[in-house]
Length: 493
Image (cartoon, rainbow, N blue to C red; front, side, top):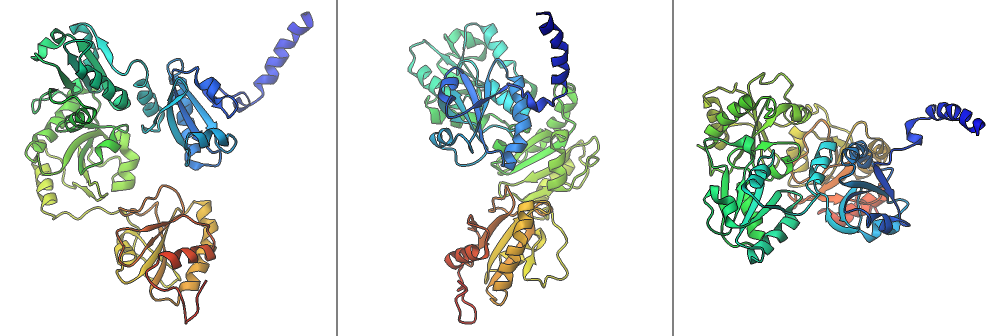
């Protein structure tokens, strides 16, 4: 026994010499074909990541997923499934791309996870998945506590527990809980302070965004269906000028959006944050109904995006807000004039924008002075002239200079271009998608990505998904191109 005790320090020293990866943390549960059903049913709420070890997006997500798992420990279990090994489980849940994230409740596939993929975003999104779909409020104090929150609150008020409207409200809460906070009160007196005398739904905008230009509480007392409630929340949630964050930016960017970026911090500087937002809102109220949404954001949360997408550095604007517009088609505009406190510079910018007098910002490398190689080099400024040439079928490769897969494809792509170089109707081109804006209509999330822009279908480019050999790409072109591939009377295939 004494010998065993003496061995403990030695064992501890030996273990200390091993890297942490040898003894992985268990905050993320590893699941497989043999134990998925058994272990998943033990978890009330679980977020599962289906991944492949070779997937670049999976590798990028991994550290954020680990951090979120640690923060959510004890509330929500995070798990992962390696789909290169556990093919039965991944096939059963319809996994066709990596990473795929799904929310499970008591072992059952509940919903796809469509939230942010940062540690903070995953944490806040999954926090909303815990507890009941809608919290039951008993008193006015419960109501005050619930609506005093950083996010908006949706509260249903009903005459009794057997109300048909309550049943519909709870169905909506179950479907929409990953996007909004829900609560309900049985008894109209609970919400008497808000002048409620009939069954309805109250939408409370976040208290930090209270302002003199609009109401902070809105009432929906029409039909209580899932679709009508979703529409009511969607149309009224953000108000005249929402606070754009990393978590909600994708939902806001479904429309043309103006954003004023500055040192916004409602937690540590509420007065300063509200001051500039009120300046934006004053102008926004004059342009309401013209198809442009207004927002404010903390520039520190979007520094890399502002630099990469708009060419703006950290010093641009200084302490004053600087303003951008991003349309739903991906067109970008920046206000170059300094933001004046009276809002007149913003009004001038908007007048020029609506009258079409502002040139949109395009991130582009210089147009090549010479472009005689078989593979034509395209930049954002020359994309229209080359790829959207109405008389030519254009095969365009989007690549990254540092991508090993792109480097491997380079000799194949060059050989393809050489083979087609005598055909005047087909152009083989490439564009550095890191240093140039990718046009709307081209979905580029990995490299290399290849599209064909055929004659007569320039607004409907065809993505190439086949093998990356000359013969395979030629077969694709023969099938999809508008012009004949035969050269000098001979079929290239």
